[in-house]
Length: 180
Image (cartoon, rainbow, N blue to C red):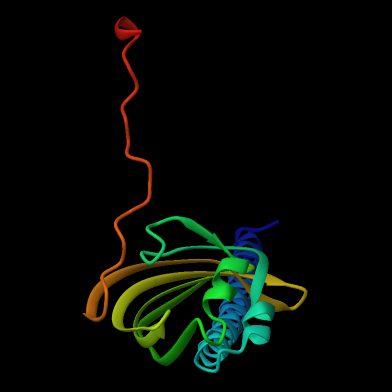
C-alpha cells in the first residue's frame, strides 16, 4: 500500500471516529436538554401542588422512599408521610413559593436541582416569610421523574419564628486506647 493510500485510510478513519463522537455528544446534549426541560416541568407541577395543597399530586411526584432534611425539623431526616402531613390543608397554607437562581444538572436518570426560594406561608397557625437554599434530587422511573430527596437550608427569616436548634446528637470524639 503506498503512502498516499495509507494516509487516506488514516484520515478517513479519524474523521469517522470524530463524527461518531460528535454525533454521540450531540445526542447526549439533546437528551439532557429534554430531561432538563422535563425536570423544570415537574418542579413547577410540585410548586403548583404546594400552592393548592394538592396532596394527591404531591404524593405522585414523590418517590415512596422520599426523604428530606429541613431546618424546620432541626435537621432530622423526614419521610414522605411526614412531608405530606405537613402540606395538608389546615396544617399549612402556602401563599407564595418563588424559586430563583435555579440550576439543573442531569446525570443519566438523575436530575439535580439547586435553587433559592422565597416562601410566604402559614404553618400551624404561624405566619412565616422565609428564604432558603434547596437541593432536589429527581430520579427517572418508568418514563417519569420522581422526587427522591430534598434538602433545605434557611438563609433568612423575614417574618415569623426562627427554626429550632438542631436535634442532632452532638459529636463526641472517641476515647483513646489509653483512656479505656
